Amino acid sequence: MAEVSPLKHAGEQIAYRALLARKWLAHRLPRAAQPRRHVFVAGMQRSGTNMLMDLIERSTLTDVYHERDPRAFDNYLMREPAVIRGLVERSRAPHFVIKCLCELERLPALMDEFQPSKGLWIVREYRDAVNSALVSFGRFSQQVERVAKGKAGSEWFAGGMSDDTKRIVRELWHPDMNEASAAALIWYFRNRLFFEMALERDARIRLLSYEALVTDPANECERVFDFLGLPFSPFITRKVFASSISKKTPPPVSDDVAQLCAGLMQRFAGVRDAHG
Image (tube, rainbow, N blue to C red):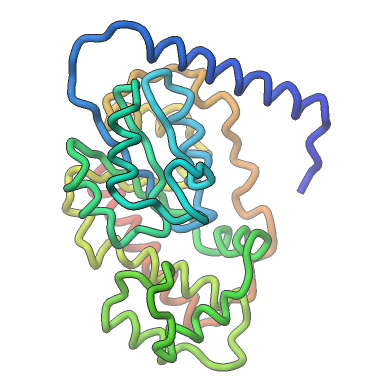
């Protein structure tokens, strides 16, 4: 990863603080009474959710809670609904935006509880997502082993798994499974929740493609903002680049796992094509 110069980093920090200052002032301007809208940003880790949150945060009409924010999260896990409700009630922005990664299987329930709501589920090509995950995280083989042996318990990565998904994991896991294959298998069974919860038929949820967002940021982001009811300007996407696509050699994912992931990618592409 290229190093960011201290001068560039300082400039980015100043720009971010200036953005927060503008938002603070905007949130204190008188507005016509309207119901607060809630937005849940969902997807597998290393799939572009940080980028998507950053884009939404550039709107002065949003109050954004990343998973690193201790007010809303404890060790990357969303705090109980009562805590989130308190944050919503204290927020002065018309759009309350929060990450929903470790809680993917709870997305419909959260949207039912916090109404009106919209959801964004972003998907990244599995090989790039795996390469990024291998740099940022680890212990994927151990996680898959715990699922296969029925020892995952209440671990977030095993949340909401159907019996059929557990069967697939049991059939594919073996003691010599490498980290890349295990990470890809987790990408598969976490993203499979989208279809197991029939979210492709939920009008409140928009499926996004990481690749489409970084290769055509202005058009894709404008569609996202329109879906959320937010005004869009080119300022929002001025720092989005496509250099992360196929940046590295594909990871050594086993053929059986790769076939599953490729099939799921095709299903996601079908949903995107159907929705235009």
